[in-house]
Every structure is written in C-alpha cells, then in structure tokens.
Length: 74
Image (tube, rainbow, N blue to C red):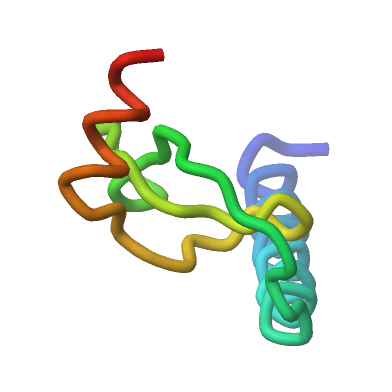
C-alpha cells in the first residue's frame, strides 16, 4: 500500500473514532469527576487543568481557585 493511501485510511479511521468518542461523551451523565491535566486542544502541546469525567474523559468544567490550589498541593 502506498504511503498516501495508508495515510488516507488512517485519517478516515481517526475521524470515525473521534465521532464515536463524541457520541459516547454526549450520552454520558458524568457521574463522577476528577481534576486532571489535559491538552488545551487536540493539536496542542500545552497542558491545562480541567475537571474531567472519570467515565468518558470529557472535559466538564474549569476548577475554581480553591480546587486548583488543592490539586497542585498533591
């Protein structure tokens, strides 16, 4: 298989996976959350602190100052 065909196949697979993840995250009720470092954007190397769902890994909020201080103390 040519490299360009392989790349096109992989990009299509990635798009399908991202769609499936988005569907799962939309259906999730986010019963429990944690504060974690996550990428600012998918294509970014910058890490930010966010509340994320423990089940679907979706970003569900931005921690307040008190939450952030407690997280950074750990």
